[in-house]
Structures are given as C-alpha cells and as structure tokens.
Amino acid sequence: MAYAAPLFYHDVRFVIELILLVFALVIEAVSLVHAITQRSDGFSAIGTLPKGGWIAILAICLLFTLPGLGFGFGGVLSIFGLVGIAASLIYLLDVRPGLRDLHDGRGSSW
Image 1 (cartoon, rainbow, N blue to C red):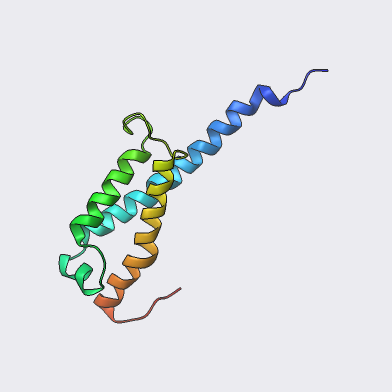
Image 2: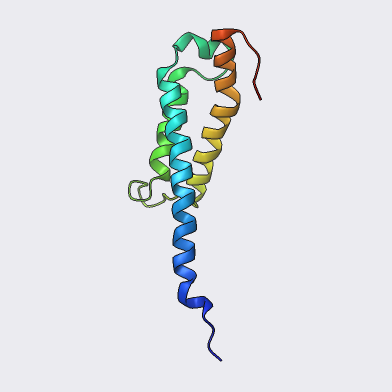
C-alpha cells in the first residue's frame, strides 16, 4: 500500500515556513522602523535600553531571520530567528506602549 503523504509533505512545509517567514519579517521590520523614528530621550525616560541598543538588536535580528543573509544560521525556525521574533515582540509590546504613553499621555489601549 502506497501512502500519499510524502508526496506533498515538502510543499506543505514550504508554505508554512513561508507564512512564518513573512510574519516574522513584517513584525521585525515594523519594530525596527518604529525604533528608528522615535526620539532618543524617550527610551531613557521609560527606563529601557537606549535607542541605539534597540536599533542594533532589531537590525541584527532582522538579518538573522532572512534566510539568505543569515550567515549560515538564518531562517525563521532557527534559534536566531525565534530570538529575533521574541526581541521584536518585546519591543512592540513593552517599549512601544511606553513611548506612546510619553507622547500622548494616555494609557494602553489594549
């Protein structure tokens, strides 16, 4: 009896990894662009890493997530890709609301 699962296994895996890669790149690019466009003094006011530190972390994570530019250990499912997603989410869910509260004075809308 022949099984049909191995015939399309690689196609399904490719599509899932492509969806995860696009999601990761969008999250990391949005967090990097947001960090670049913010004022430097806001980062020290909320008690987090300086602006240059966040930009360096987010840019390196974005490079490691790109499969062709990851210097041999890139990709979204590698440990560096997962750390990159985590760092971007920490920025977007912790630092970004703090910076937003400094500018408009309102609390979190979540």
